[in-house]
Length: 627
Image (cartoon, rainbow, N blue to C red; front, side, top):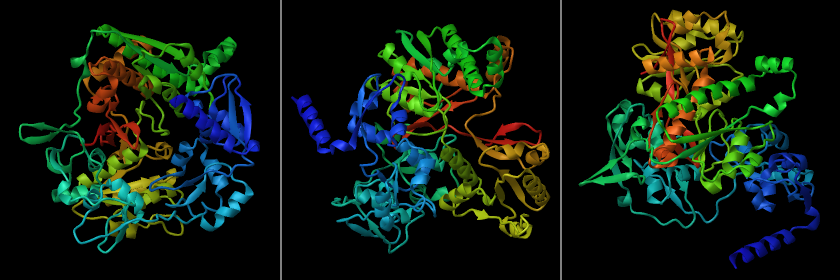
């Protein structure tokens, strides 16, 4: 009966639309929803709205209803706090350039919170109708308010009204940087005031490598409110500190005390369950069919010049070593490898999954491209199969079974600023005028940072810089410059200033300009160049032994892709062999291998690896881990 009601409702919904607003499309072999959406200039969201089953993949000869873009009004999106064009584009499966083209007027002054933008192609009438309100945030009607009083915190106010700090900040973007006495805050309509006494605080001991950022995420509390609850944090976060934190459901009771379980680094080998067979699948983009049609000469050229193919082969070489290691250790695992034939807009993963039995697969590693790994995770949600994205830096749909192994750019940056604060550092940014994204990020998230300036001739204003540095305190100079000649000049200036000031150079990432021959490595080493990284430097005897064994098998030392292949695959193999399985193991334990650590955490539905490292160039010209 329920199925009939749902079916009837679907028919009513479809027939309620104008007949001319829909187009029938018969799915061709190998076509994806993304390709079809591009063809008709609509978004995948539009197609899913009319064809809910398409979310599980589309099959050849299936008929889809496609909204006619010339009839339907374009979809709009209201920009939320901290949203970016890239994030919005991923949400609606369109490109950033499309959004910029569809919103030329609206985006002249950048993206604004509360702004309405088109996320599908608008008509002329759509554009005209939106001009008057394009920059106006949506009004929140019938909302209650709260007047901020002295000594109140965002955490306290949010808890009082049954909100999270994130929800309170989304309703009131002006408080992201902090509260002001006398401010009027908007609350959700119809909220029921809770007594402050309902707030449960527990003690938590700070673990190694934890930061203010990671703690704020763990307990869903803003960093400022965490400091308010624990004034000692103003002097920096220290291992072993006992903090007052809000209970978030992870509290267990021992006798009369409440204790929070921290996620510690563990060796999963000690808890392997060998009592039953496990199954794992690797989905790797070899594109063998394409290569097989080439001549011997062309195949040789492919191996020399095709970077993506070489990346796949390197990763696979590392994965094979992980599989061999599992067999030597006696792990009861069966591993299958499938060739993913993928391009920018299509792949054969739907075909692979439909033609093979994935019901008893305990984990899938791959594919590489974010759009393809998302499709894989969507198709395997019915089995709750964990899908591990091994290499993609992109973030897309928040899927409950999709695990990103590459830490996000925001997390890497946050880890560095947490380090600055732990050292009581004075931070000065030297940012090129062309690096507006980095400058905007610093201004929005770290207003305490000082900004050096350049004169009319493009040279650094050294006199101003000296006034921004502090004697007797650690000075972190955060640099992002695209010209090698400018980098050389700045590093020489900073080296000269080291006679008076304690200076350490820092960058968001090791960008190409730092590698030009005209920049002496000694300059970067003397300034102990600091940078965040998703990987560490292999240094233990076990790690060195892996490199030797890899060279013995492959006649070459392993690169980053090969080490990632080993680490991701071996971690997945060990986790599926735990008594509790991959999902619970990933939620409760942190692991570390040759170059990569894995500390999975869920934030806004996205499950990402939160394990990061801070590395620096030492004076002996080696790279070491910052402590």
